[in-house]
Amino acid sequence: MASASTGSSERSRIALRLLAIGYVGVLVVLPLAVVFWRTFDQGGSAFVTAVTGSEAVHAYRLTLVVAGSAVVLNTIFGVGTALLIARFRFPGKAILNVVIDLPVSVSPIVVGLALILVFGWQTGWFGSALQSAGWQVIFATPGMILATTFVSLPLVLREVLPVLYEAGSEQEQAARSLGASAPQRLRRITLPTIKWALAYGVVLSIARCLGEFGAVRVVSGDVVGQTQTVTLLVDGRAEQFEPGAYQLWVVLILVAALCIVAISLIRPKETS
Amino acid sequence: MGITAERIVKRFGDFIALDDVSLQVDSGQLTALLGPSGGGKSTLLRIIGGLEDPDSGSVIIDGVEATGIPAQRRNVGFVFQHYAAFKHLSVYRNVAFGLEIRKRPKAEIRQRVGELLDLVHLSQFADRLPAELSGGQRQRMALARALAVEPKVLLLDEPFGALDAQVRKELRDWLRRLHDEVQVTTVFVTHDQEEALEVADSLVVINHGRVEQIGSPSELYDQPANDFVMGFLGPVTSLAGRLVRPHDIEILAEARPEAVPATLTRLVRLGFEVRAELSTGDGPTWVQLTRGQADALDLQPQAQVWLRAALQPAVAAR
Image (cartoon, rainbow over all chains, first blue to last red; front, side):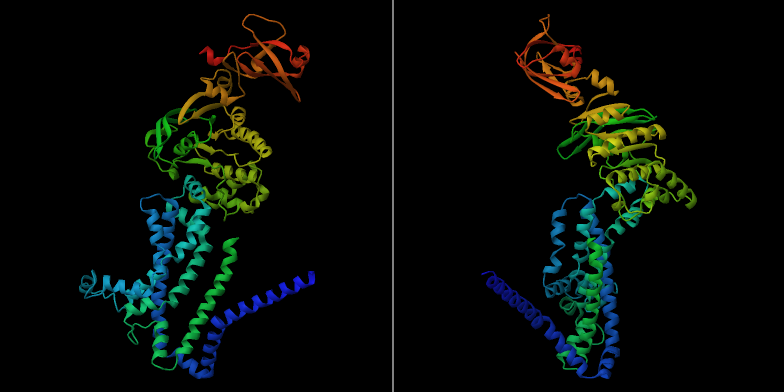
């Protein structure tokens, strides 16, 4: 009796394990393996040409500017808003807390179109005013930064906020009674308290911003050699059957893998 | 000198936390704000420390109007119930915090922190993180940290409330000795009347956002202004419809004028103390006796006795 039940639970365990491995294998490992195979099938020199060409370098630079700006903006905004929500009472706080999560649930295409409606130079509300001031937002870098910032808006905030709640405000009050001004409290008490959550949120944001495609595609106009980030360049090359799509894809995957390693290094410290 | 609070009012929405509270704390004294939870005593302490702003009224510290001055410029030491230790800083850096903020020279900081760690018996723990200390040690660290900046007044919000009974008693004695050594004007909040009576020079009883009575421990114990203060400061029972302390009732074997007849229902021996439970015509009551008194009376269950208040109860006398 006992051995039979052990046998059947053993069998179901093996079946479950195979199912899980098969699921991950088909969804993740197989596509990745195909990309890697396609990349290195074309040889080392094709790889070097594809990832070091002037088009690619321009795309790296633009991606760095767009993602970098978005991450910086979201870090400042995320920490500031998290402090506001955790430490102060004000009317509309509950609504703010909900609205902040909208960007991740709204489709990026919708985000892009909405930005065009607001900032586009012909139809937008502010577009013509900005245009006459010499600022082109849509089909240019500022619009791409806006779109990327928008889609990754709550990532830092959502990591930092629970840590702020858990830490409470007593340490900050104690620092205050010991003579620390608001900037001193932020630097000496609050930032050290949230630093691992902040680092985790920043890495998540970097990963999200580097991979952003939909909203950026809509607002950038996808102008070859001008407003193409790495993801847009990969898409462009793949659609035109140009060489070099898989190679850039591998670069993106390697960066994402670096982010995952960084996250796994940060996570245990955050929970300790 | 010392601390003066004048006509402080504080509301949280519809809830009135402090309703026209005035008090005076003399320089160098150790004063307890005593009262039940939610009575407003912590709010008053936080207003004195500048961590909360009053809706109206003023706070004067050492003769200087402090009401508009933010907490960081009041030079007030504050100790929290849950220690508020800076978790990412060592014990040494915690104590040094206020001095670092004030940009004192390194050598001076080292000397001062060394002295304070000696004072609170934490010298050997200087390099530990707060998480590696016990609750009592953390609170002593918090006290050293507050004292480091040589505050004009020291404010403690239920400082021993999160500690177990044994440690609480030790720290209580230690706080009294420390205060005698350092001589800084100190106000501490507690809901434990034994703690307040034992440690403080003067007591302020606060309930429902109002001051019920201010005075020395013996004044408040022996001459409470009302039933609330009497009941809060020590055990009470009733005799002939009046509140009395159970140790102020005399048990008599024979009838006397103004003595109330009673029947002994139960006799409980609690070590040195004997607790006699009786029923009178007005209901049950109890008397606290020493073992010697109980033996002299030779009390037996169901015995008929007479009860008389040994001291005139202060509440009725007023």
